[in-house]
Image (tube, rainbow, N blue to C red; front, side):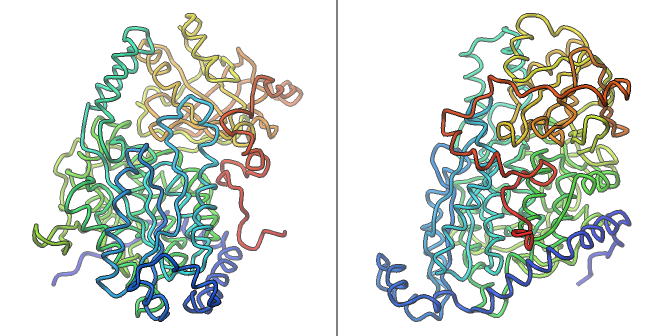
Amino acid sequence: MPQDPVQMPNPILIKVTQRIIERSKNTRKVYLERIEFMRQQGVNRKTLSCTNLAHGFAAFEPRDKLVLKELRSPNLAIVSAYNDMLSAHQPFQHFPAIIKQAVREVGAVAQYAGGTPAMCDGVTQGQPGMELSLFSRDAIAMATVIALSHNMFDAAVYLGVCDKIVPGLLIGALHFGHLPGIFIPAGPMTTGLSNDEKSQVRKRYAQGLASREELLEAESRAYHGPGTCTFYGTANSNQFLMEIMGLHLPGAAFVNPGTRLRDALTNNAAKRAVSITALDKEYLPIGKIVDEYCIVNAIVGLLATGGSTNHTIHLIAIARAAGIQINWSDFDELSSVVPLLARIYPNGSADVNHFHAAGGVGLTIRELLDAGLAHENVQTVMGQGLRLYTKEPHLVSPDDDKLEWRDAPTQSMDASVLRSAQSPFQPNGGLRLVEGNLGRAVVKVSAVAAEHRIIRAPAVVFDDQNDLLKAYQAGELNKDFVAVVRFQGPKANGMPELHKLTPTLSVLQDQGYQVALVTDGRMSGASGKVNAAIHVTPECLEGGPLAKVRTGDWIVVDADQGHLHAEVPEAEWAQRPLANRPVSQSHYGLGRELFALFRQSTTRAEDGACTYSLPGAEHA
C-alpha cells in the first residue's frame, strides 16, 4: 500500500512543544512516577479485602459476579454525566446498557461507577447560577475521582459532552492516569433553525423589535431535540479536541444520537477500552496518552477550527492535571502559523452537522498533518499515530454493530465551511493574546471582521453586565465606546460567562459604532463578532490594573498587534487607586455560598482557574 506523505513539522510547532517540555520537566516527571507506582499495584481488586469486594459486587447478577470474583477479567468503570435536562446528555440514559452488553461479549464486565454533575450554560446564561459554572468543572473532576476511588476498575469510559463536563471528566481521569480511558460522546442534535435566523431574532429582541414569544419560538426551533447544540461553542469544541487528542474512537464526535452508527460506536468503544487494560497485551494508560505532544495537538485543533475561548482556560487546567505547563503565549505563537480551516457558527453560518458533512474531523486532521502542523507520532486509544484519525466509521452491515474505518474525504465537500491548509479562511488561527498596562487577555479573532479588530474609544465602566444592558435600554450607549466589565474573575464571582451582552454589542456594531469589550470575566464558547478582550489577568479582585480604569479613559484593543492598554499618562496610572469591589456583588443564593472555598483557592485564568496543584507542588 502507498504510504501517506511524511511532512516535516513546522518549526514553530517544534519550538513551542520543546518549550513546554522543558517548562514541564519536573512536574511531568513527578506525574509519570505516580502513575507508574499505581500501575505496579496490579489488578485493583486484588488489593481489596473480601469484605470490600463483596460490597463492590453485591447487587451484580451471578455471571458478572463470578467474573469479578475470579479477578482475571477486566472490570470497566462507567462514569457518566447523564441527566435528561441537558439535550446533549439525555442520550446517555441508554448507553450503560449498551456498554455492559458489549463488554460481556468479550468476557469482561462493566459497572456504573458513578455520575457527575452536568449543568447547562445555556440555561444559566445571565443568571446567578452561571457563577457556579466554571467551578463545576473541578467539582466534576472530584466526582469522577470519587467514582473511581473504590479501586475496583481496570479501565474507564467517560460519558460527557458539554462545556465544563468533558474537561472535568478528563481532569478526574488524569488523576487516575494509570487507568486506560476512552471518552464516548452522544453526538449533535439534527439541524433546526439556522444560526443566522436565530441570531437575527436575538438581535431584534435586544432592540425591543421582537416579543418574548417570538424569541422563545426561535430558540425552541434551534434547540429542538436530543444531542449537542449545533453551534461550535465549548461543547462541540470539546468533541473535536477529544478526537485530535486520540481519546475518542476516530470519527465519533459528530455522529447524531439515536442512530445505529452512534450505538455501534458506543459498543466498539467499550470493547476497545477492555482491550487496552493492563490485563491485556496493549496497555494504554490515559496519563501517558495525554503528553506534551497531545496537548499541543489540542491547541492546534482549537486554533484551526476557531474553537471556544473557554479552552484557553480548560486546556491549561487539563494539562496541569497531567503535570504539563502551558500558557497563553503558547496559544498565541501557535496561532501565528496555524491557519483557520473551518467556518462554523459563530465564526460562520454553518453548524457542526454541515462541518461533519463537508469532511469534518478526519479531513481537518489530515490537512493539519499534511501541512506539518500537528504531531503525528502520538499515542492514541486506537494505537500509535494520529493518522488513524483521518478515517471515518461505517457500519459493515445495517444488521449488526461491526464497524470499519474508511478514509475521510480528501478534499472539502463544501469550501464555504471547511478548507485545505493551502487555501484557508485566514492564514493564522482563531485566537490572539493581547497585553499591555491592563494585563493579559485573549481575543477570539476568527469571528471578528478585519475592520473591527483594532478599536480605540473611551471606556464606559460597569461592575455588572446588567448595568450595561440598562444603559443600552436608556439610550446611553449610542456611541463609540469600550465596555469595561470588571470584577468578573474567578476569585470575584466564579468568572461567569457574559454571553448575554453579545446581542446588544452586536446591534451597536451593526449600527456603525466602534465597540469592544474588555473584561476579567468570560464570554461564551459562542463568542461572536465583537472585539472582546476577555479573561483579563490578573483579575480586578486580585489587584489587576483593569480596576484602575475610569469611564472616559481612552482604551486600545488591538487584536492585530496584540495590544491592550489604557491611554493614561504613566505617572498618573501608577498613582491611580484601584476601584473597590462592588458592594452589590453577592455570593448567596442558588448554592453559591458552598463555592466559597473554590473562589478563595482558585488560580488565575491563565493558570487554568484551578483548585488543585501541579504534581509535586502540593506541599511547596
